[in-house]
Length: 460
Image 1 (cartoon, helix red, strand yellow):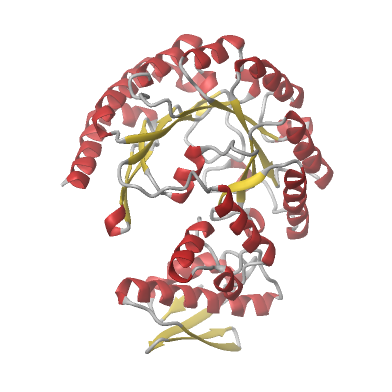
Image 2 (cartoon, helix red, strand yellow):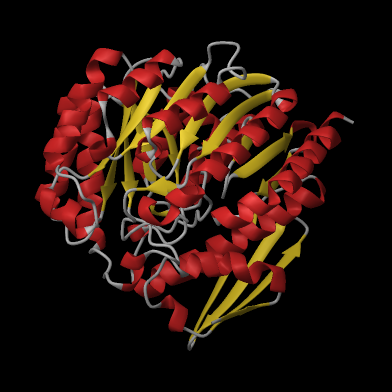
């Protein structure tokens, strides 16, 4: 456990403690003080004492608090790194978006390399961040009125054992489908006046292609009046065993420009172990089936899945590259509360996971892909990251906007999180719809009312 002289810091410091296996069992006391522009942190961990000082000028209370937190976390990271004789790939950074810090520092000083070095970020990850920022050139835009529309279809054929989302097998939730589509239509109709400059539409899941043809067509018809500017339009089609030519044709007929084929792995043994009901061959078949329709294709892989060997993961990377999708995202396994796998698995050795990630970076770069978005999550194996790689001019606008939080995200459906940006005030307000479908159906009018209120506030 940890006790800190500033109680509000304790949850932030716990994020650092979670990075080191075994650190949670230590008795840690930390005293954080500020004198002028000097941040001092004294730590007592067991019978060892550490003292760190960092100096940096600041302007205003907001920046002071941010730096106070930064150097408290960095001091704890330095101490634990010494005790466990271990350095982590992102150093003391625990935030979801390393690129946000990099952008802020670029605006402040013109470079971010020295800050990342101070915070213990590896040279490889500092260079990766720079490549991501370059990959976002021409897409990254902070402008009032920009908005992305997210449509939640939380239905799946089965639930993967690493999944912590609300999705349940379609056999259990199909009874809600008529009412769900009707409620979705009401939300979308009410959303039309809220949409300014629409940059992208993203239908996510779940597995949207688990819907029947007529159901999928109903959703796309409801969206047609909203997409007036020919913006990027993505359907996270999902698992290859749900693909049919009819569904692909429906998507093309309604202007979909991008689909996602969520392979996760090209190892049949791994797919079976994680609860998938399809084979690696079916992933390849889904790509071949989609090819005549002209979509850009996103493909996801996960490093660190149950018992997967380095050879199996490397084979998956090679197989994905061979299919030449527009985008390949390499996730690191993240086990959250609610995931069955969290209770049943042991972490992979850090070295093995690092080898997997290094291989993916090397091979994707050699194949002509460049990283264009990255994000991190709590409880990620090895304290690594998720990285989206794209072929030239094939980056997904939605992925950039949502990860960098540079545009409003108007989200509809169960478990949908709407985000409204107040750029002048440098803040974001969130509104989360109920996670479970029955509660969402009961409260849809209240949801519409609350989102209208949020947007009206922004216009005053």
